[in-house]
Amino acid sequence: MVFLDFHVAGSLREGESLARFSQYGGGGTPTVWVDGLERLSGSNDVASRYQNAFAAAEADSANLSLAIDTGYDSPSGTTTISVTVEIAEAVADYEDCVVQIVVMEDEVTSRGNSFDRTVRQILDPVPLTVGAAGERQTVVRTVDLGTGWQPVNLSAVAWVHRASTGSGSSQEVLNAVQSQSFGTTPIVKMSWGGVKAAYR
Image (cartoon, rainbow, N blue to C red):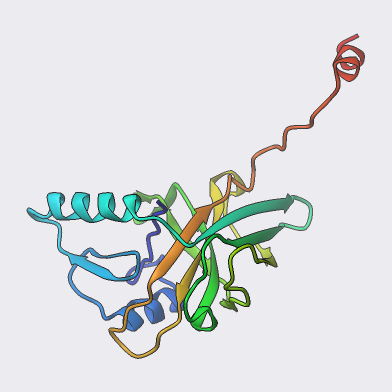
């Protein structure tokens, strides 16, 4: 299960986040959508409702799986995001689905507060072109990181959802995945001989 925080007020709000908020039909604060279908709103005396909705979503099986990989290039300040969708069971009306990718950041400071899972950039959706069991689709995007963004706190999130339109309409999320931090140093696999040579 992947959580994202779309800010719609204050200095961290983004135009795309506001558009998404309007698409689903905004409510109170906070307003939470689980799998893009179930809306929960408010913060008082609703803990059990949130927990039950999350538990039900986590137990639900998906028709497709997602894999995500990122490559961060420090000199240019860009990262390449690769998302592969693999269909496990046939997806009905897959032509109405899209692959959505966002960049999020933890430990974002605004007005003296620190926020995690803050959406920094929403990339244009890519139509899902596969729907039969065993089929795969790979989406590759290159992203310029914003000024002040900390690569070690950044990661990418991708999901597949139904692209229904109209305010208040649901956009069912079929599955989601989160990458490692952009600033994570990749592990270089070495043979035993290579390890001995490195430590002579």
